[in-house]
Image (tube, rainbow, N blue to C red; front, side, top):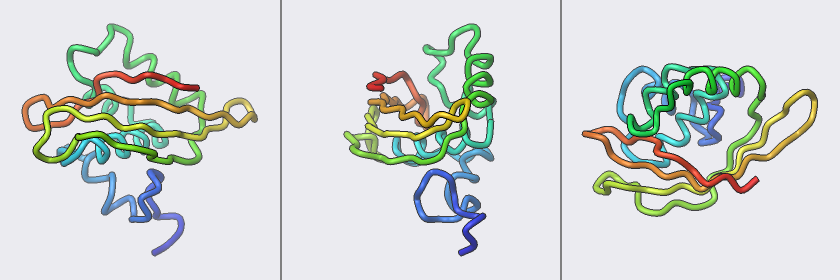
Length: 133
């Protein structure tokens, strides 16, 4: 496996076999798969994907602008999935606790979040999260 082709989500798989299918409209089978694909989307600046995978009830009027601002302002460097609750193929809701490292204006930072996910039809969607730092 070529190091430059590794998926940024940290799965150890290539991007092509990991998050790329989700970015090309395949539904993520689990909440954690969606969360990983959203992290990769932030890395690659895939604003539309991040918007589309946010639950419709939580799409703020300026959400796309907020996502674009975050994508441009932060360089995401590492993802650690720390814990998951439900969010499997047979579940309707799920939670993922993760920690993501980033660099902003030359300074390292850490984003920790308990994210909530919910099925919307057949697709997992990001609802919201409690940021821990």
